[in-house]
Length: 398
Ligand SMILES: [Zn+2]
Image (cartoon, rainbow, N blue to C red; front, side, top):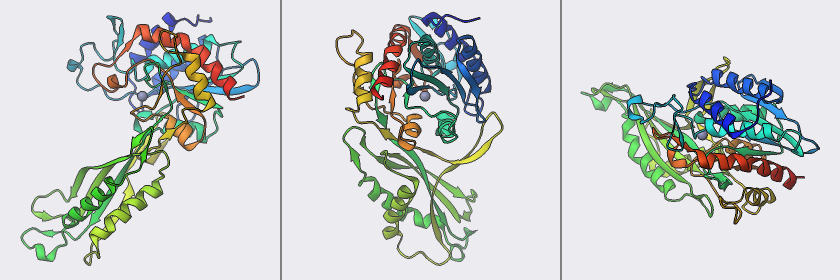
């Protein structure tokens, strides 16, 4: 039985999704629920890919480029339930807000996008693809897999991360780099027989400080920034000279950076400070790795790397989108700006070169907090703007 594509039904769907916890790698029940909703809303080509991304299509009336709407199905951990005013998985509606983990980041917008696509049946000039991905909160494996496997080949992508109704055009990326220092372990009572890996730390920190003070700047995205955030020391015993020290660097990068460039820059910055290494000591600069396991059973060890991207503010698609959405009182085009946080748009635009923008209700400052909420007036307005936005994007790309 078909369901009406209304804001009220979208809100009820968002509440169902919030009530299903879905940390990265555990999105299976949410993905099933999304597929089920696509079925009652009349989507075609409904499927889950091998990694667990949920995909459906509202066919277009013509041959205009396809537009893909994307949100992610994973959420970050909710922390201590006692710290929440409204329980994180109750999806309470109170005071004009939908409360709970995922209400804004991103199950609320996910529901709105899905319903907005359904409401365009028989009207959009090209296909409207809805693809909600896994693992966004851990670097974006879902989006990378979706586009690399050519499961979908969209002409444009609209990301539903919070923009408070503005049109967003990009963000810095993030890379986690490790500098591993190797020495020779020994008893702390006889340090002359050991090579202390900690001895190399000051030189590495000095090199990183040089690099941090010499970061490139983009007029829209601001400066890249880099900071050492952690030191792991092995063995952990306090009466042993350590032979294995790892310095961790959090690096907010501009869109042009690749892993190889980043690692080469770190090596070049620390080498003058390290000089010739004492015999038996070694330094390795590498990307931090994390083993990830999808709910479908596929596992992969991945770089902790999220690419950045930036669309030109005068790109025809961006200009058309801002005009189609308008500001809240309809008196002017929507504001155009970058996001502060990173999104799956880094993959779609930064790596795969697909024109990408952001549009959704919600304020970035509530993301990942225990006060996460979605303003329902703003959500209803944003829902009402999606149809014009999608069709404007498709027409701008013909
Ligand atoms: Zn998000």
